[in-house]
Length: 203
Ligand SMILES: [Zn+2]
Image 1: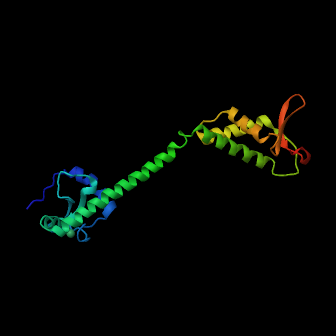
Image 2: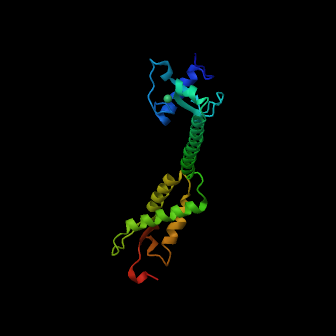
């Protein structure tokens, strides 16, 4: 007898590594290794649902030639094979949806809404002010413009180029408003600085 399969040898070769990766290099039915020297124990590709035209990877199982033949008339083996097909399809769709989740994470930057960007701006501004003025007794100033440029740079690196310098300026001004612990003021010929409010300046 000659085993025939509608898949060409090349197509089979391409699919076998994927099946081995999924099920191991053993017969699906008895979990025993293949033996090339014994024709009945050679490796064949079995179609789980018995449809030899259905070459979806989920439908392909490795089996001894003997076991593949036996399955054709053995209802129990056919049930087990169909269960495997269903499980393979389910696992494939789960890993597909995991892939979709990853894609969504990548999309996040592109789909940032204006509100999201404002939130990031405010977080960056607050983090910068808190790190610059960690000493509560130090009321020396830092350059407003340098802070503005620095935060804007951090902003565009975190948002894929979104968010304007104007948005950073608005946020900085809010954190330096009369009710905030920081203050911006012009010194001398107009260089704006930011500094911690002195205790008597707090509203
Ligand atoms: Zn077998």
